[in-house]
Length: 224
Image: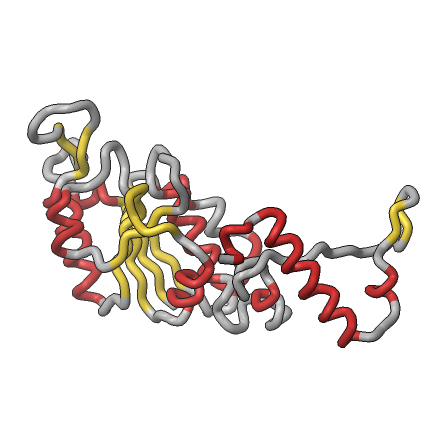
């Protein structure tokens, strides 16, 4: 998979995209991530990529020209399955979207900043708008990092245990069950006996029951 990211603050993406599972995915050649500095496409020598809003109001807006130049250059190099804008008014991101995007080949992410990007860029280029939650960040960089991480770990071969991602919370619409490791007794708190008996059929049944109970208690909206 190839992912391009357009941003005015590439340094915010350095750490989350270059460690742990994302680093492993890149080293295996399964995921290629390229971060592009929007100021390289600025309208003047001062690196300007934003301007005041038409109609007045607080906050700057990212301009059409720099974004269009960068997007057009990248589109000349490859065809994108999706051009994604990270924005608080996008669709709420969830596991089904992550699963869908993990099967794509080429993605382009646009990180908003300030008051966002000119609507005409959204109308002309963007094919999918995503929000990671009902709150506002200073920019789209952290949202882009979350998006890439959640997608990248689903690519076959990235995780050492191929079944690991399939048993995560939300994969089957339920929250994951509780998990335990050694010691079997910690300060008087014991691991459920069923997990120690070696009967994997019963263990899977227990885990499913626990998933249902946990979802009912913590996220009843998912049960609907």
